[in-house]
Length: 376
Image 1 (cartoon, rainbow, N blue to C red):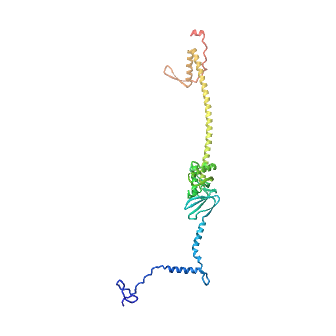
Image 2 (image 1 turned 90 degrees about the vertical axis):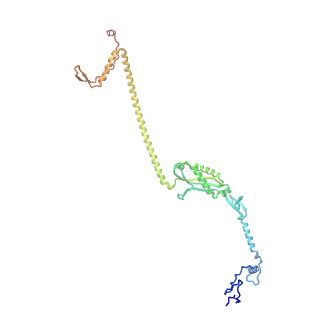
Image 3 (image 1 turned 120 degrees about the horizontal axis):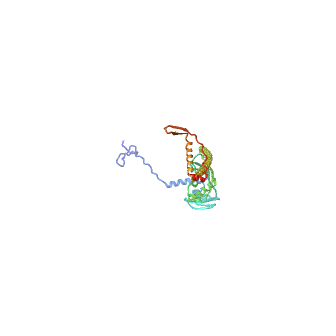
């Protein structure tokens, strides 16, 4: 059987080859768009929706063909009406056009182009705000209220800042987080004010001066930056040692108390020693004064005796010389218990000599007579 097409004509293909025994593969039809056919189908569908159900003859409703346009108009109206807004009492509104401030509006009813063309940011400028910083009951997490004092101790401070928004535009756009910025400013002011202070100074000083110093320093720092915040006051809520360090501070307090007691005891002992030393010094001064008086009296007596001897010597030098010799021998012999005397034959004899009685002081010799002077 010859290879032929399904028609059985047995002809070869156009390339001169023999056709397949199963015939030629059918071609896939291409995607064609029939505009007339599509229009007819849409009209037929519109006719179904435009007819009233349950009625014999279909009543046409041609206004439904305008339904999409009406829906679009309604949506545009709703979008336009969304541009009305209200700014409350004590507030200011910032009108943003594609993110840029184009106007500032007071309280009341206003209109702006709806989103995404324009938007409004309202800021409550008439309300007092409060920011609390420092340690609370949140454990031992680090916060802006823990400071290190000049004596190496740690002090926890809990304080609050009262502020208002002075410039809404700066408040909204100068910082992504104005409260965090204010917290950094207050923390810096606190550390500048308390630098150089000891823990005893911080814990014992009055709060009012410290609050005023922190307020002034924070206002100076805020003036350097365009934050839009007006700081009104600073209040210290609590100022104390960390609770976790209470046992250590109890030990420190006990050690300080013991040191103070020992210092008082040492001071008392020093006072007693000083009193005893003063008494001993007074006693020594008195003894020295008595001895000085005695030595002075003896010196005066020696001077008087020397003057008497000298006067006697002037009157009769020979008698005075003999008397002085005898007095010297008495002094020498009074200190000797024995005297060794050698005789002419070479023998030595020890003579016990008793201490002679001290003679009366040398009396003033009487004036020589005329006969005595002649006999001499």
